[in-house]
Length: 260
Picture 1 (cartoon, rainbow, N blue to C red):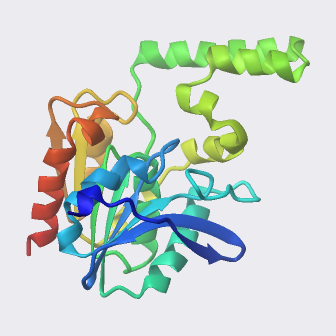
Picture 2 (cartoon, rainbow, N blue to C red):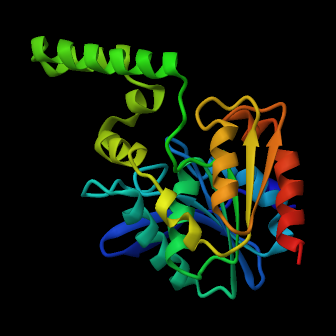
């Protein structure tokens, strides 16, 4: 069975940038599995293998993650989208289904808004538009940022500044390391204005307990994308939706792709 196979990684190169990915399955439909920030192809590998009978599967490591070397420049989300557009064109599939988680959704949204390459999208815990924060949360965040900037004035050594980042930065920011500049550009990316350009069917799936990309983001995306549908799963957060919820996701992805 496909579940037991240890598959070799493939490499794609475009304009000097390399991408590593798993490829398995056969058929006219190509599924592209796009992980979230700080993850790699392992995030989606089990779910993709459970659907191997549905077509070809490309389970990627975005540049800078997993086996893919980081970009030489400070890429924007649009740069990632442009790179993946070239990848999609290179595989010459008749039908492309994009499955993304968090950051992978940002990239997918930009591809779908700019091209007709994607037939359907399943976006899990999608990011891409600013969160709405309560007054107390916004005030707390503002004070935290200002205090951090003030302390940086008095701390000149890089070691000392690293300690400040560890104290005040988000988990993703702390773990970004060499990709920190790309991460900062990513979290400032706002796809709001391009959402009306997305014409393909989109399934939005969120965990009710997700604090990183809360369901209110999905509600707003659902209103802005013409052919979107939204489902909120009660028992999952930003990460357990991919692990504890993998069987549910597999079932929902299959049904959505097969629907006319």
